[in-house]
Length: 374
Image 1 (spheres, rainbow, N blue to C red):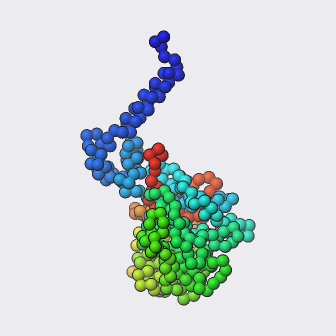
Image 2 (image 1 turned 120 degrees about the horizontal axis):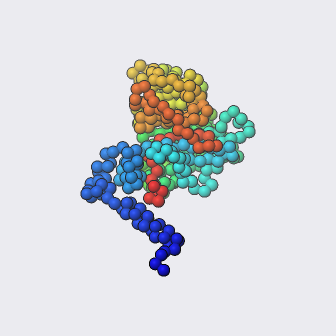
Image 3 (image 1 turned 180 degrees about the horizontal axis):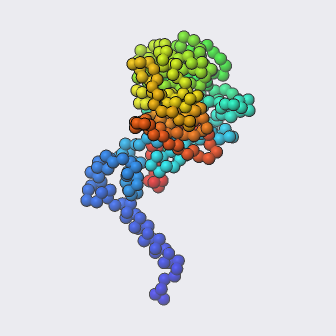
């Protein structure tokens, strides 16, 4: 009579384990210190150390109490034209799906039999801690996005930006500070006005949920011609200017403060031989995709200084820069991360999910996480 049946014993053991788990989760961050003091102490440690010690410290690095660490966000496509946005967490070394955008808003064409040797571009940029999808091609070969789709990692949510006067594709898209820019491109048909246009949207003028009254695309100084209207171009924000180079190696600089287009220095455009990105909008890094050489632009000499060479960099077609790291999509679809803070630079490969092809990489703050996901 006094003995317990096996299932009762199992229930008691499970209950005791859960109580012990709850007790450990509720324990102080640092025994003997109030949590608000412990949070100040722990905020000085690297997130990788906090992640590896215990669950309560791990929860802390995904909370608003600790400055968010940078993570890799990658836009992928599958063979059936499905677009996916995934985040790679450098603490757990795992890919995590980003919540999907509003239903039906991301119907983009990437692969088509008429374009065997290349993909149709999907243009995305990052600015003010957000990822913005700006341009792409719909299944009927028209511009797919009438307004930008904006993802905030810290709120794990999407919102719609204000509509463009003319939705377009094959344009130049970039950011400088908190403002994003769309230049040139082609709408549903070619228009000289669109090919010469430049529009600006300041993300700091937006509310979290709805676009505020003041948040509208603003027309800026036109280009002198439509030379940038047939390429999908990453316009690179650098020292208060937007750098634009097309496949014909024609370059231009846009001064964002003075609303003026300028000629690009000869040495700068001559070394623009593949993807280029700016670290903190201060230092330009470029890959010569034919030679597999990574260089840094030296403004004083108007020349590119070689800093490393790697076979992996041959064929590179897109790059992002942040937190002392370059993230490069290489010719074979590898995602290569290069630490340019150390000398010589150190590189490693982030293994991508099986069956997916990377289209673009961005470095943004890590996503917030509900406690049941930590």
